[in-house]
Image: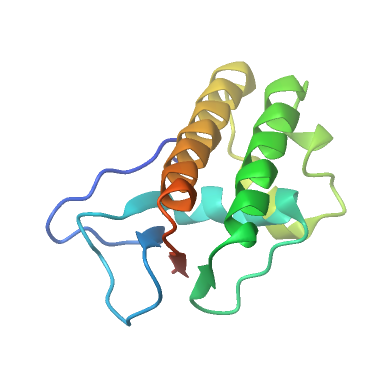
Length: 138
């Protein structure tokens, strides 16, 4: 699992989540988008709890502010967790499976925290500019 935002490149693909500025227009893989490893995104969705992904989701206005707060809160929780099991308990099959493969939690915890804060900063730029955000997954 890659804990870091993935830069756009022509032909980018695989199991990724795309954070695309603007409303859902049906287009994907934009140079203006931010990308995340799909497994890391699933783990993020599990930790945020109040978030659900059933297809492309457009977030705008006050909801972008709440998403920004959720990302900051999640980054704080991840940064203080002694192990991945503190965040993804054994009984949480959704999100936990991906973390069975984490080998160096202190290092990967820092990377995951940094990725969440980078994404939060990007979301705040959209919010401050009055733009919407569309999230695609898969």
